[in-house]
Each structure stands twice: as C-alpha cells, then as structure tokens.
Amino acid sequence: MSWLRIRALVRKEFILLFRDPQNRRFLIVAPIIQLLVFGYVVNYDIRDIRVAIFDQARTRESRMIADAFSANRIFRITRVSQDEKDIEQDLLQGKIDLGIKIGSDLSRKIRKGETAQIQILADGSMSNMASIRIAYSMMVLGQLNQKLMKELYPFRMDYGKIDARTRTWYNPNLDSQHFFVPGIVAFVVMLIALLLTSIAIIKEKEAGTMEQLIVTPLKPIELIVGKTIPYIVISVAQMIVVTIIALLWFQIPMSGSILLLFFATCIFLLSTLGIGLFISTVSSTQQQAMMTTFFFILPFFMLSGFVFPIANMPVVVQWMTYLNPLRYFLVIIRGIFLKGVGLDVLWPQYLALAVLGLAVFAGAVSRFRKRLD
Image (tube, rainbow, N blue to C red):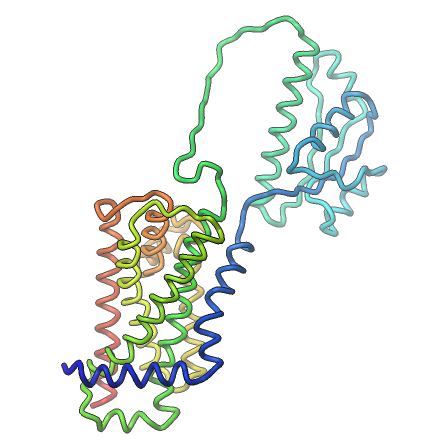
C-alpha cells in the first residue's frame, strides 16, 4: 500500500469537498445548528404546566388549593372555569395541561376529618409528560394535606416512619440537557459521516471519473482508505467543535478523559464510515444512496437508547441493538461526560465498536474489490 498515492487521493477529495461553497456551509454550519436546535428541543424538563381550576366549593380550603398551585413556579393557572365542560374543551383544544375539579363538599369533609376528593384531569396524548405532571400535582397536594392536618390536629403526633434520603449521582439536578446533549453530539457526528460517505464512491460513477480511478495504479484498499481519511478528519473536527459547544454553551460537565473520547470517536467512525462506504458501493445513484442512508439512520436512532431505554424493548429488538454502533458510543460518551469513567469500565463498549467497525469496513472493502474486478 503506497501512502504517496493515498495522499494524492486525499488531497483531491479535500479540494472537491471545499471547492463548493454549499459543501463548506453544510460541513461547518449544519452540525452547529443541529446541536443547538436539538439541544434545546429534546428536553423532558417541565417548567410550565398550564392549569384550569373548576371550584364548586368556593371556600377557604378550596382557595388554599388554588394558592398552593399558584405559589409553585412550575404551575400556571390560566383559567378559573365556571363550567365542568370548559375544562374538557380546553384539554381537547390543547389550551391547558391539567384540569382540577374541586367538589362542593370539600371543606365539610376536611373539617369532619374525612377524606376529601379532588379530580385531576390530564392531557394523556403524551403519556410520559402526563405522568410527570400528575406526579408534580400530587406533591403539591401532599404538602397542602400536611398543612391542613397540622391545623386540624395542632397537638404533636409522633409515629414511626421511613426516612428516605435520595441522592442523585452524576446529574444532581436531573437536568435533561445533561443527558441528551452528549447523545446529540454522537448523533450529529454519525449523521454527517453517513451522509458524506454514502455518496463518496457513487458520485465518481455519476461524474464519469470512476473509470479514471480504476485505470490508475491505486489498489482497491488504497482507494477505500483515500476516500475515508478526509471524512475521518472532517468528522473528528466536527466532533471537536460540537463538544466545545456542549461544554461552553450548554454547560455540560466533562468529568472524564478527552483522549478517551477522541479514541472512541475514531473507533465509532470506523463502523459509521464503513456503513456509508458499503451503501455507496451497492447504490446506483446518489439519490438511491441518500434514501438508503436515511433507512439506516432512523433504526440506529430508535434502537440506540438515545430516548427509549433498551431494557424496555422486546427481547428480539434488544438483540438487534447489539448490531447498532450508536448504542455503544452513547454509553461511552455519556460515561465520559457525566460519570468520568475510564477504559476499565468502558472496555466492553470499545471492544464491541472495534469488532463492528472492522467487520463493516472489511465488508465495504470486499464489496468494492468485486466491483473493480
């Protein structure tokens, strides 16, 4: 293998890539925009819950319920309904997230020491968000219940109880961005690398320069390496840029080794670029290559554990995730960013990425050699 010939091919690829102004904007601006957009959009933190209250009691206790929700910064009472059907209509139209119905016998039951009922209606079209909103509502009502109990029974009541003290490691404030942004960094790098390499060879065929490459002294492995190196350099540069943005803009902590992150990125790119080159060798046109690439991107995203826990998936699907390089890279990048773990903990993910990368890259080289014969 001649590195002199490879260097000439790499130089040619860089010239072709950066000669077009549109390519320069795509390579430089697109990853930054994607990280900023996804970093703010993909967020499970709930900071504004719109509430409508239907108060049939109109007593001090019912006003305490409304005040308890108003005093909480997460809730915002947007409407005090006069009719029960108003809440249902607001939920249907998406104007509110929660509806609270207070019965007319609320105060009477509380003063008699009986259990008073409050109905909470939640928009369940997004089940995970509805569960969190209901949980927050129960916390507010639980605190109000303790306050009313002290008013009804002013004497001291001592009884045995479990004292649970919760401590959250690695993400003490449970900030969604700390969980999602490292994953978005990995996804952006994979997306750009796949899109670029999937058309790396097919564009030579459509431009009519493939025959010229075949008659050159370049060996198949040299052609593959020469086509891959520019995209490795570009992907690593993009990884550095989006990582800096994640650290400085989103204030994501970097607890681990940057060198380990760089090493993991190179291994991850081995499999990602290998898949892209394989797509390029089996496609006939650039349009076909792009469509095939998007066919791979969605399963990679859904089966990576980026949003949905792999443990919650069916067993058959869980086995399929072992063929997804993004699954292992997400574990590595989140472990390095948030936990600060090293190779002694992450070596299974590094090994799996290396095996997948070598297998996929060898398949791409084998497929390309057959085309040259």
